[in-house]
Image 1 (tube, rainbow, N blue to C red):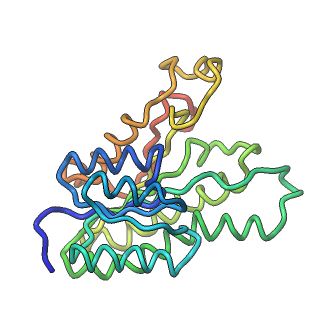
Image 2 (cartoon, rainbow, N blue to C red):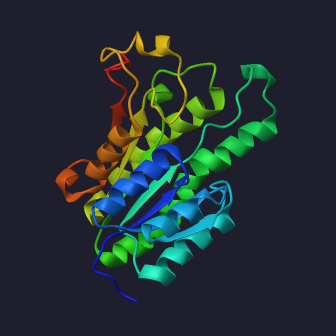
Length: 235
């Protein structure tokens, strides 16, 4: 089966930033294959004329099923958006090993597994693009989110290593680092330290994601792009 439209696979696509990215890409002509832990991704896929399934980024079997669904439905994968929710929080030295291990499976290993599953397909097609949704705290870690910060920093390193290895084969990988976004409820005072003095919108995240996945960003790879209203100080 061969399709002329580009095909995007998106995890964590049932709501928030993932759903907004799905809607934006659909508006730009992409076929969609969506996954989330709840039925919300299946519902959204039905609304947007795509394919959806319920699954976890921590499960290799679910990721294999996601890729299989994309290939059986459309015969190709042009873009992958790796999006995962924040794992449980806790006091740094009181977090059980099992919770750290679950965070590793969901955040870091999911990126590696999707790369292993999809890279051969993109090589055969002549190219493609990955986008990893992480956090503004990737380079300025916050002890309130220890597991997320630790493993998303690892994703930043992975993003660069992958882009170095597969850039010569026309496959790009970048990471998008959101700040305070209206996908979550934030108190009004959260906007005060932000130079733009407001919370960001999921639409802004979605448009940035779409740009990074498009040919307009064809010379951008291995980058960690902050979309945080200027909040972080990292240079």
